[in-house]
Length: 138
Image 1 (cartoon, one colour):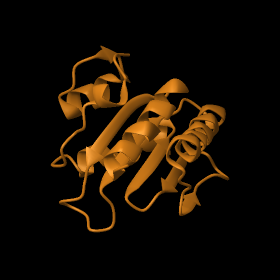
Image 2: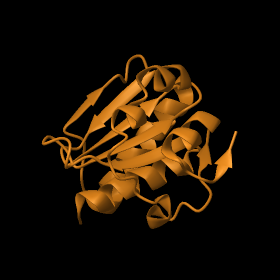
Image 3: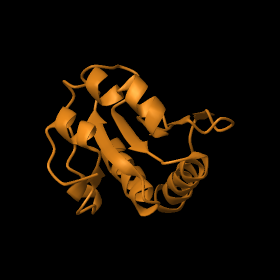
């Protein structure tokens, strides 16, 4: 499997736990340390934790991979799962708004979530506008 396929599996797993604002960015031309960012939002500590668990379990089951590192699992306001070739960021809304990773890397190509089997992603108005995406908005 490729790092793109792994990132899409992570996005699908996050979506299955009702994450919102899921974005997969191809950052390999801007960063030398990773190929893709998967960015998602969970409404609260419990949902962020569930999203991260689902991402880890699904990637372990479907791709046979585990994260090289984890950060933020104690606070659950921004959790980073580092898989080397891709990084999963799961935020609560306040920190997602503060850090705005999708704006910081706005020159990176956005991967269509339909490739992950996600047909109707949910986007907040700001994320949809920032990324020029259409779809369901809050």
